[in-house]
Image 1 (cartoon, rainbow, N blue to C red):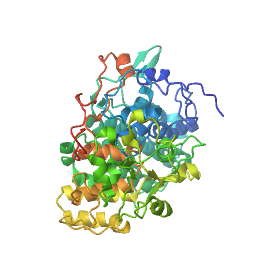
Image 2: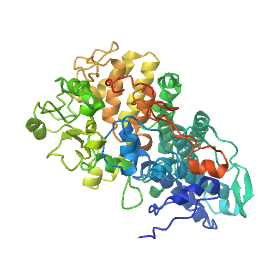
Image 3: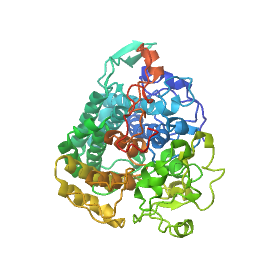
Image 4: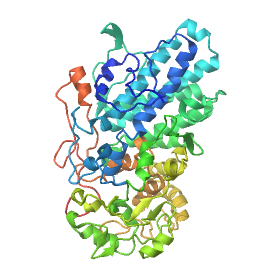
Length: 542
């Protein structure tokens, strides 16, 4: 095992890494370190190839923002203070605490620092490929695949900054270098708004597609834990561009105004089967969001969203209670989700549901006292009888080959595009693929919902758009940017609890280094960039 000492800051992006020195956790042993001498072609290829792992760590590590976002979006709930889960899942919502000294600052800002670390590695690597001595020692396929993969990582890293932060820097191998501290460092210029960062990301994805389309080379397996051909990398870039282009929206109005034709075109040109990566947690590729999110001792499924499957009235009774009175029981009776949706347990009693787990979810096998039914002072509204099973095999069985993108995500993203483009019949046909497989009645262009799933908090049956949202959520738990389609989709659909931050500011440590003070913060019921009242209007506590 390598020493837990902090790795050197990557590349010459010192201005984008200084604040990260307060971070004392053990670092990923595969993390690229461009400060090493790039004296050989092998060094250069390794640096570019390892950059995706740095991005992966910043996005999916337990030490990142994913678990906090998941709690904020009700994808899962935990009463624990780890990783900002309790704090940023708290009701009423609080603003993001943008202080280096705050316990959870490093978790929420990690995607920023590791995305820019990945960009630093790629920039140094692509610059080195322009050295005639380095380039002449590599084959044309090696050069082209390295450049294509570098562009792919540039797209991923910039897109991550764009969907999570209010602003950022566009940085690549062409960024002007200036002398600072005796070494050349990039001059970042002024930060630009998130939508401009996303436009840059789309351009890098396009460059990757052009370089990869039809190519016969195969990426080394270690670069992204999947042996992709050039054509497969191009398709992956299309799918990632579609995913992040949709996730950029901060509000319902922004979501509706997206270029849905372009998003659908990328979906159609994208992957044709699940993109599966070997997320080996013993080899520097741990997906802590999936692992901890589905770990039964840490997590449960709060009723706010999942309860919309219920047809018994239990959910409506639970929802009618004040926040302080919400619990896993109502009048002494367990709050059970009784539904025709086969993804949930079947039956109308605890005994029946324990004996008949659903395709994706199950009822607690034993009482949760002392486990997730803990800390009532942190809100008994978090308490639920239900657990995730889909994805739980990642840690319980060390099933490390997990989908990074499921076809269901891309298909249902296309369904949303068709909906916004007024092809409701086409949207319904896609929605029915997973809906009918889950035992629910098919819908149509008019949004017929004979199963009444989802049954909204006001007791009405969800229409076509709500059925699309339901299918996308149920089929894509712990997937998407930072493992959180629930947060990014929910933000654009107007579903987040009032006051949930709609994005994060530039990390305060970065703002201090660059002289861009004062540090800002977002969120809170009355704060800037806090979510408005949810479209679900769960109860009077909002």
